[in-house]
Amino acid sequence: PGEDVTLVEKFLSYFTREIYNNGDTLWKQDTMSDSAKLLVCGQLVSMLENETGTTEPISIGNMIGESGLVQKTNRNSTVYVLKDNTVLYSLSRQAWETMKENDPKCAHLLYAIVVRYLTHRVQHVSNRIFETRCLPI
Image (cartoon, rainbow, N blue to C red; front, side):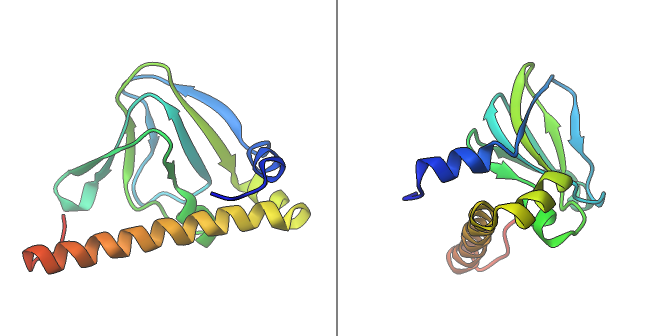
């Protein structure tokens, strides 16, 4: 929010359009993070393999894989496609490295997204602990 439209367009120019179908696997838990993806339309679900298959739907407009891409860590979950013609825009590791080198203002946008998402996740866990006196699934 509040970012210059030209900067956002330049940021998105580093992404490539991808189309997936029901049953496709975007990535598996514990594999190396090599991209971040923005869900434009369709349906995805994230599954925690190590926690007896706990799932969470991924909403349209959400970015996934951003933290792992920036931190160069393994995937935290497996992501499956639940609907044909699911459209994502993908930022590859190579495009991310190029963006950091050539367009630091664009790279700053991804850093800001990572911070925002991590803040949201921490607040979610804190609220869940406070409300239920137990950890979220």
